[in-house]
Image (cartoon, rainbow, N blue to C red; front, side):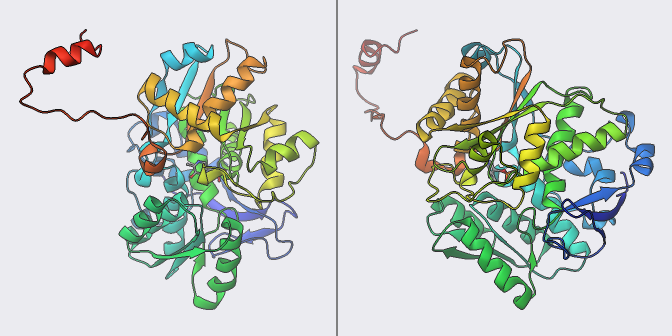
Length: 416
Ligand SMILES: *Cc1c(COP(=O)(O)O)cnc(C)c1O
């Protein structure tokens, strides 16, 4: 196993350097997002394709480019190592023969939030945190609750009052302290920022804490490794706070420093729902930062993020990649979920359904050419959303002793 080569933190706004081995939130000088810096010359010695081959398929296989120094602190529930699936039927329907699906719904707790929180909780533990807290639209809370249980420390999670009940109960099942808040994730965040310093909790709000992005960046490393150390033409990413885009963009630069990638980069497609699209609006208006979105509503809870501290970083990455931003309706999101389930056998969360909707639009508009290699990040598992699964198709009840059963079913078109 590799060793962490973490050396410091750098503010993405004022460039101030901070000591790595301490619990920081945002930059103490300017409030900017802090990003982890590694000794890449040192990492290069052991982070080689041949060496990686023998490591287990969880995200700690990339230990050189992650925090956590003592391997005893590396919590794992088997996060990462998710399949990159070909999707021939969907590809044909969308007119994109080189389509790949990165199925992040296989992660522990059913979403890719487990990547960020495996890393952030492990590192907080190594630095001596005694309790952890965060605001969440749902999936981050579930992941925090699971990894805190694994680490044997209390978790405090703050969710909008209308979070899907399955996710609230999931957090309770892991033994977390769960609170529902009148308002949105941004209001939950205000509560955490007020209470954490007073009550001795480590605040793991995304991008206000530098390490969840490090965990999420492993999606980018893993994708490059699965494609044989190269990248696709386009990455389609359902975006809430944008931690994944910030993380993957950073990962590609780090891999280039290690000579595992060249200068080529995929174009990022940032997807948000029409009912909450602050980054899409900012992208198309040419703004460097995003104005908060009023009255955010969408059935994709992970995308109901009206404001993010990472806005400037996300917009910059999407623009520099040559990418674009698309808003899709809740109706299109449901259609996308249904298409993935019926044409490929993948039950995904609404956030993941949004990627299909975006690709369909971009293909029709000609922004995506038919010969381009496109990867959809399917960030969550549909089983987390029983409220969105079909309930309008009548399911027949059969009498096991009915002598006419074969004839009835044949008459209904079930003979093949
Ligand atoms: C949190 C979440 C997102 C958005 O992720 P960001 O990296 O914060 O933009 C997308 N999909 C699901 C399922 C999520 O839980």
